[in-house]
Amino acid sequence: MVGLFRGLWRANQRVDQWRALRAVHEALRVAYPFILVMALIDVVGQGCLSKSGFFFQVYHIGSWLPGLEFWRDILQAVSVVVNGLVAVMIAFTTGHYMARTYHADALAVGLMSALAFLTLNVNYDTFGQTSHGNDLAQFWMPNLGPQGIFLAILVGLGVGWLASHLMRGLATWWRHHRHSSLSWTGRVAWSLTVVLGVTVSIGYGLSWLTDGGINDLVYLALQTLNTNPGHNGLRILLVTAVSNGLWWLGLVGPVDVAGNSSVTSLQNLAYAVQHGSGWGAPHPITLHTLGDAYTNFGGAGMTLALLIAIWIGSRQASYRRVATQTVLPNLVNLNESTLLGLPVLFNPILLFPFVLAPAVNLVLAWAAITLKLVPPIVYPVPRTTPGPLVAYLGTGGDWRALLLSMLCLTVSVLIYLPFVRLLNTEGGADHAA
Image 1 (cartoon, rainbow, N blue to C red):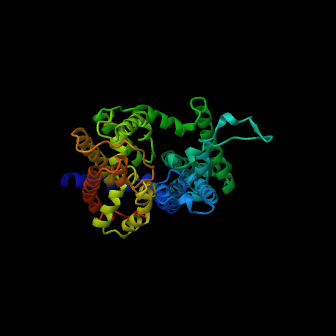
Image 2 (spheres, rainbow, N blue to C red; image 1 turned 120 degrees about the vertical axis):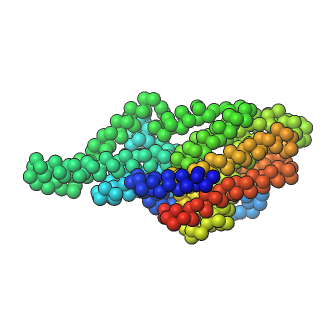
Image 3 (cartoon, helix red, strand yellow; image 1 turned 90 degrees about the vertical axis):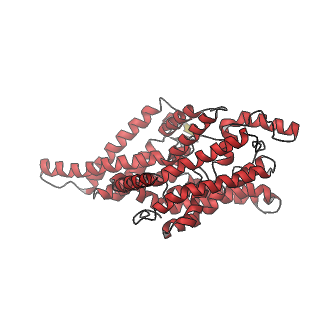
């Protein structure tokens, strides 16, 4: 185990010297406050004002809050602006900091990165169509939010490198062949022309393959690989591990835990309604009954356990500050602010527990349900239900499910603790927000 920690620390030190990773960490640091605000807005909007929200149902908010529709509209508008454009923001900041490492014009390159990302997410099929007499080209809006973070990082890195070298190369070429200096406007305009030419060509070419842009093509491929793992515990374990690994890369939500088991969930619910209990349900082992119930406290990677481990074992003020700031969103399973704020994304030290903790919990739940120590969850619960309560409420209030949830949370904290303490080493939290 000591060898593992030493290897992880050496890997973290090497990776931290990479130009691209430094740019990514700086970009995430700048984006974090905006993501935090987005998360807090979503806590209120999804948890308190949505009809399917946990707190909306528990406190019957619809029966006593005046102007409910007004508040919903206001928060939805703010959420669309912040949440809907977070990937554009990350494309800009990644390109900006990548250009700074090359001593190029960072602001111009950052804007090029944002524009390049947008051109990859245009619905080219709408060209020539009219709405109120105007030609429109619509964006694929889901790709501009958290789901587009991975692509935004790639675009920012790629454009940051390409545009920085283009601007420098153009200046050198112009001075050598024209014996004069190329203006700043000329360097930016020619570089932007090349960048947009490349990304528009890619985006338009991909429009012949998919109706949702390049990001949708990636997600469809991943979802195809992970569709319907059935009742095989090993396959469910593999899907969960792969899904969490993809989250660590910034590929948010490639596997819909509840969606993959919707049919079996309805059959389990019908059984429970007929028999008054989840014991003996026809599908006790599914991605929903294991993953949704016991491996996602706080969101992918059991990040609620990570926050608790930070409070217990971290001496880094920046990590403790992020943990305190993001605990409320994590309670309702919204963890994007934690992933970007620490950051968890692209952090070699946190990758191992981020994948291991949910996997261990899944094995514990698999064994407990198979041995009939706890019933499977059969009743629907709101998505924003605090993680440790999902199994308890989903089984109709079975205390054994709550006890198993507390065991899973405790085990996850113990898994995270050594890695959190490893980050206490000088330099381990240099990039925390």
